[in-house]
Image (cartoon, rainbow, N blue to C red; front, top):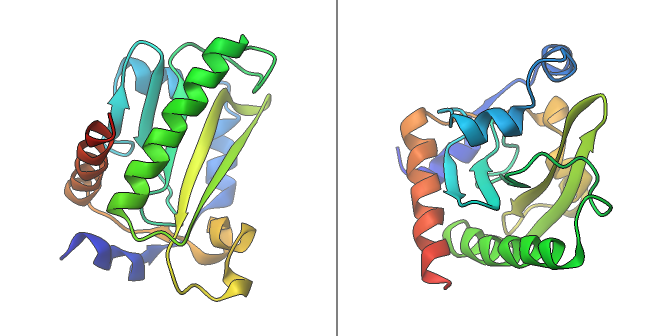
Length: 172
């Protein structure tokens, strides 16, 4: 199966299980991945300041999460200007790399999370493919509860992460 063919294969998203998992009070999922990467979240890049990894439940191919390595919870207040701008520069470079690897009409950038679950501040980089009808774009393209998420094997996910990493390295 070619990498880009996986878009047609989807798995239903269990919202109740997801809510139970992220509100369970267990360790922060970003801090866990920083410490010990997981096959469900292949790491694209990590240095002392930033980490980028593929979303475990991608409604769009190449959907990537970016976070500071250190645990921060507030998207603006927990950063000084220099570290915030460095993170945004990292996001820009990564967004260019994703768009180079995955056909992208529009790259959606969001910072989502909650003090009740997924409190580690992180950004979502979601590449909308060309040709998606307008009524299926924007928030509709991101709603996994309605459309499920893309079924990818661990090998496919690792291959995609590697391809994005190579493009990211070329952006220097």
